[in-house]
Amino acid sequence: MRFLPESKKSASDAPAESRRTARVRRKKSAEPEKGPKAAKAAKAKEAKAEARSLEGGRVHVYSLDGDVVKSVDLPTVFQGEVRSDLIRRAVTAAQANRRQPYGPGRRSGAKHSVRWSGKGHGVSRVPRIRGSMTGAQAPGTVGGRRAHPPRVEKVWAKKVNENERRLARNAALAAVKEVTIVSARGHEFKDELSLPIVIEDGIETLQPDGGATQEGVKILDRLGVYADVERAKDGRHVRAGRGKDPAKVRRLFGNLPGVEVVSPAGLNAEVLAPGGDPGRLTMFSEGALEVLRSWSP
Image 1 (cartoon, one colour):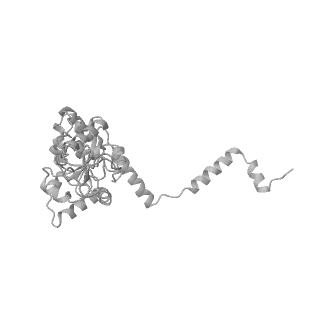
Image 2 (cartoon, helix red, strand yellow):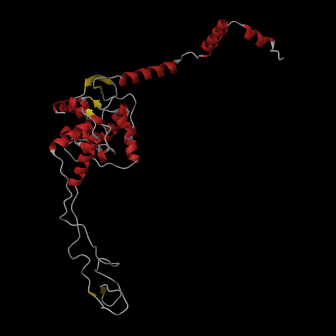
Image 3 (cartoon, rainbow, N blue to C red):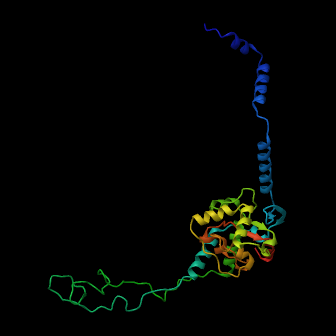
């Protein structure tokens, strides 16, 4: 028989209620007291939850300093279904319609002075450049012309009707408000931001004292999206658009890599979903958002 030490024996003989009370007391004493850091973290968590708790298609409107000014309802065009198939079809058609036909001249590869030695000479019967054994002109020879070169008359354009193009644009707009889709596309932004990012109209009349691009970088940094510009700079460069852009906004952001400035009239599936992948990180001015309210879903 094995005997327990006195201390362990007394502990085991104690009533079950007393043991539970002791465990609760030890658990409470082990919990650290909430300090300034814990309070700050709780406040940040509260703000994040409040930002994410916007329901009914509402988004925050941010000032140029990155503070929340108010909340507004998104236009109904944002409430449509995200149709990746329509977006991909419209973007592919837009890229195909910009493709320039090309092809060689009709006599390319057939301008040599060639001869054929005829049968019975123990060599392959291919046209050869006079005075040498180099094959030329025939499609099946090294140095010969192409058998089926591209033709200038080939039609690369793809037709997409107006209704389908509109639905693709609306589907791309619906995708820019989905946090999961935008994050999956690789964009970097603050967790507490509501998407799409809506900024007050002062952005369209801002006259910076110093460099315009430097002021634009500061605004993006205050909003918490400049990390995405650095991501685009480190990766491949996306050429800026050439549409009818607001001149002052273009001065602020037009030279930043990965940033494209367009007016509401210039929005399409390719601008909102480059490469056919929906969920581009998008920022609207409050006035531009009001223009979208007249669009039919």
